[in-house]
Amino acid sequence: MELLIVSLASLLAGLVDAIVGGGGLILLPALFATFPQAVPATLFGTNKSASIWGTAFATAQYSRKVKMPWRSLMPAAGAGLVGSLVGAWTVTQVDPSLFRKALPILLTLLLLYTLARKDLGRHHAPRFAGAQEAWVAAGVGLVIGFYDGFFGPGTGSFLVFAYVRLMGYDFLNASASAKLVNVATNFAALVLFAVQGHVWWHLALAMAVSNIVGSLIGTRLALRHGAGFVRRVFILVVLALIVKTAYDTWFRTV
Image 1: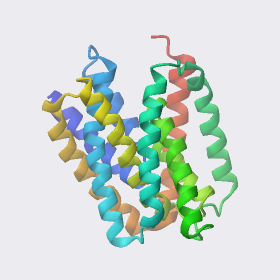
Image 2: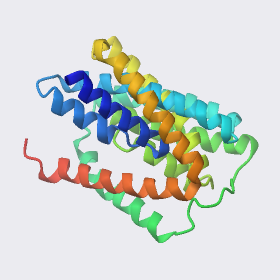
Image 3: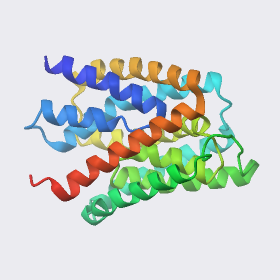
Image 4: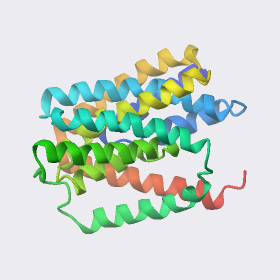
């Protein structure tokens, strides 16, 4: 029964994550509810062991239908991997609790900005090209990769927003590009968790397969319905992140 619950949660998480990121909102609570006595790091590691596969398959699916800017994506992915490793090391040196309190406020500002700019992300008009785009993308990967390693919640949404706002992508192309960077940051975190023994490999295979199935469904939905659909899902996911992070920060007592 436990395997069935987390596999279904992994499928739904893969679906949401493939569209706009935020699958951890579904899978992590399911893992914590199903295994309340487990060490949190083990549940985080097990989550990464499934989500990285769905994200990788989503990247492959998008690349068949969306023109991927590989010359800027590869530096962004490399920088994201380095940033995630540095962030994971930093969290062992610095308490991230202060940032936890600011996160709901940052997400609220991001949501309000997106709602106020009704044309944001509806049209694909990249602001940079060539080496300049590669440098900007690498900067985005490094900063958000560091955030993913240091703290984590909402990484996919922050990546999508950065590609839309800073680089001029529409939401569909931003989501497609964000996937590869997210694969890199997830890989860095997964390696660290695995080396420390914080992955339940007996659950990983079933959860990975479920996550891939959900990812394929989510990718098809995004490609079929376009940037406007991805924007709407983005708004819903950010809203859910605000509610969850605000509750975890200010209202949960245990």
